[in-house]
Image 1 (cartoon, rainbow, N blue to C red):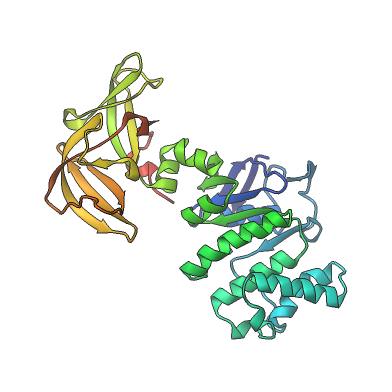
Image 2 (cartoon, helix red, strand yellow):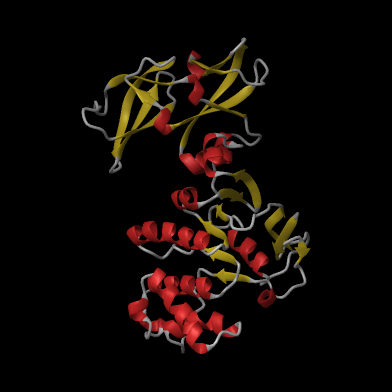
Length: 359
């Protein structure tokens, strides 16, 4: 609780407090430099906090050495023993906790099957690609017998297709084995698809924490809405508060109606709308004239960048369907969204641009 860590005066983690339930799969999402690896190393016992307390099962482990924490840390750098074969590397954990050699090799073999590397069991680490080495490190963590897995970008060096396949198999194994996992990543889709809960870390502080659908549908701030879904943000001022409606005025006199929020007239706000909720050629309640400025083909979807009459840009993501109307650059169309799809945030102290910075 309230854990902080600094390195040479630079704050890596700032009064971080959160809990992980037994058997839970927690994903920590954040950019490089957000404090993700520092967090795992603190939990693993590889470094000590400057302040605050880390608890396992309600007991402080601040002074408990890493080997006694019943946690397996799987680092980004693999940390494989270069003189041991793949199978021997994976069997190291079971052997160190007292398993007989035959049993340790059986455990290691099962872990290698999971990561699809049984066929390289007799190879040395130097004979493997970076992606293969990462999978070996993952298998070693799985075979360690620890109840808590600390996974530092465990799928980062894999190609896209294998990463997609292994992320769900990894979660399945954790669940079937009754393990608890803390999995850090910078990949939004990876985090959202496998986590029981997700934690957004930024500049050493927790920005949001909750179930993936809650974090997505009801983000606590502009940064979270930007990171986990790709939203449009427009600056406005509260013009009117009625029984069930808040009216926001954008520059140029454009007015947007939203559900009633606890705001005050003339208050500066930011409205957010997910790209997939921006409708084209629409008669939605919030509907405006626009011009198509760019069209981006994204495989299973098409993204349109549109300019409103006041000069603001707004993006719309349209998932591809048969008979779907297509537009081209220069087309004049109606663009809009329903009031229920509008998010409202307080105007950030340092401005919208600064609030959207990842680092």
